[in-house]
Length: 338
Image 1: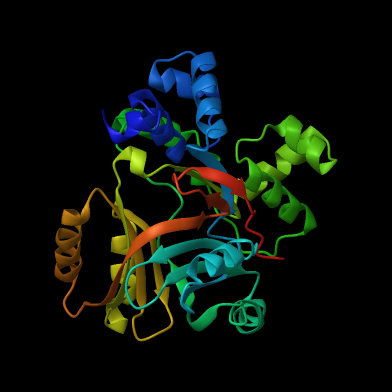
Image 2 (image 1 turned 90 degrees about the horizontal axis):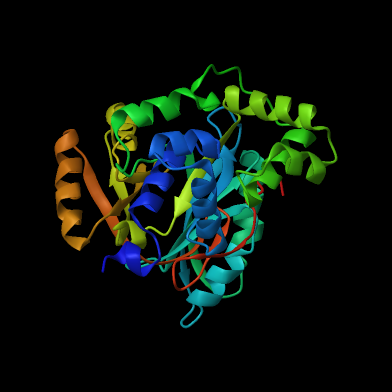
């Protein structure tokens, strides 16, 4: 029995999740045509996955959303790691929390509306957390990775068809500050990124046409995107690693863009610090780590891997609180404007 089968996820479920990575808000009719299943069957499968915490879709900032981010490494007082992780996970500006091996006990990914608010969060919000012994914050200068990943479960033609139907793949406009309506729409879609227009309109107290126009505008202009997540273990990805690298400054953005496109890459960001590139990657097993490190070193001359951490447990993943069984147990929506 495979890991997926033990978790109640079969091959059709993995194909569905792969399709939703490409177009998270595709209709069940579109998905059914791609997967050769009825829309009713696709809808039933997706509801089963979400009810069991095996898969979920959330809103995420698009490339045109003006935000500040940072990677925060934390060491904790003896015996306090779990309590610190849970406390951080309850903070809406802490997007993700991972317990790790190595020098640091955990790392967190944090977001805020701008640098000033990020500074206040790091100095006054996270550092004084009970049980925190030491922190290191590395502000994100550029994010090279996106929110859409591939599992390789559907063929290239189907992937192209779904991608072409995704409004996020169209034009971009100049960056602008989100208004109050943008923010509440973003928050509502944190709970359920596939929430219907009717339910969104009811939740926000607006008409369906108004919600539809704003949602289309935000996705089309790159302010808003969506990410599909699922139990990684069930898909065969048993190892999650975080790497801190030193890359020559003149190569940093070129290397970051290259690694950001690799299928195993989840986060790839240029950060302020001696180790100026931060990468997280999902691998099938521990034996796949060394080939990945060799590939990184061979990518460009002068790359040094400063630190490597193995994620022992994920406590929060982009707003979802993750249980010991790796399933989503609850939601603390990511709110950069909190």
